[in-house]
Image (cartoon, rainbow, N blue to C red; front, side, top):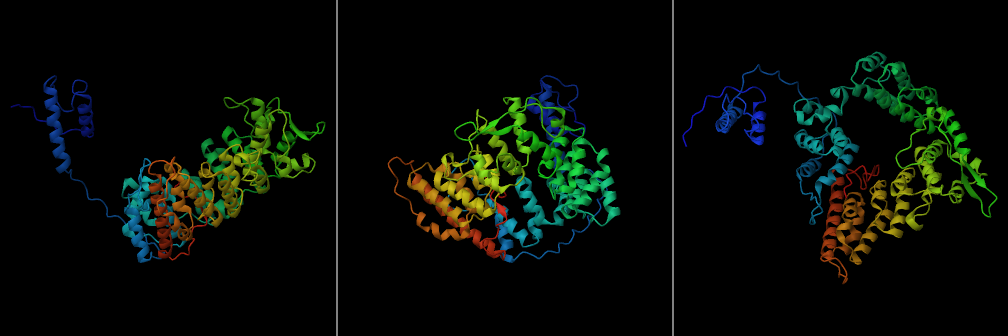
Length: 558
């Protein structure tokens, strides 16, 4: 069909987007840009002509411009270079895209991208520099996975910032590196510290305060106090949060002043920090309030705790961080009571309750259905105050019914309580939990355990998986734990798994094909463990090499 149309003028900036919009909506609803007065049947023709012209222009056209200034050379990285084998391994890890989503069968090949966080942790612990040729792929991987960014940027070093200034896809490296990679002044450089604190961007000021706080806590607090009155509320909240590092009694006066802040969130954070100082005046006030709510009833055959929750939330309680308005579905009195107990020093209760130990206290019955509220508040207090004795009492023995003490009302609370214990204690408790109750509820608890898992914990996980296999359990329901084991089980455990690689006899009630899946999964586990051992050797690290990590530090995906 022959047709003619008027010439199309050069489109304005954004014309391509306008053309796409017109094509999607239709020319009846959107007039094509630069189509002239045409309407009706002429509009589609104008749209196609404009699109054809713009396509050629986009492919071949280049507007002359002044030559850009040549970039400065990339900064030097003084760290030692990776061993050749480790550099080759990094290339393989970054190139792998074998992970299977959606619960499909993965085969027996290790998922290399899931091993990248652990490889980066070991490489950073050894102080190696990233190979320059690997930096683009490393930054691309970190762009797609935020969990990789801290370790990837540490490994990439100063050249990551240099590259991010040239490629907008890697801007996250600039956001994560305040000052564009410029070194922060040392605390003793008073003039530079003062200038950056007064004139720097917010991210630079946060980084400066955190750096000084880690080295000289009092100097950081004094720096913050000097400008506190003029800071924005949202900035005061972020700055106040930095005081968690090195928190001590000398911070009390400043935090007491913050209790009168205009911002409710700032007041709440100040109160939380003060309650973490058992000797603070706020902790003493909370101890009096909470102690007045709990007593021992000796009139019964067996001693029992009784609770009389507050009948009001007065101004002094609000000033000390008690939130007056209860969430939907919570009674006001129980809401106030829980906050008082959570903020009171745990040492209060032994003196208040006739010298009983924490274990004796939590075993006392509580009248009138207050037990759940009281013990849940004690759980939060034990986590806030990092009190291992109370955490043990509230956790109870792992083999107890419902696998917890009277205060462990949820897996989330148990995981937090475990965080107050040493790495060995955590592993031992979770191993006992798995031995008594299996793996169905253990995934969240495994996330707080140090990596690689201690031998008792690793043995408990493998034994539970073997029991599930022999029982013909539905295999895909254990894929999350199996994937976690690939990243967290000690590589030395690989030799113990050789007997699990054969396809087992399937019980009559087993899931169809379960035996083959289990054999495949154990083969992948063994292969991955042996690969992790080789990776550590390539980096010159002893096996095990990542005991400072927890499973949650690595990518935990169910």
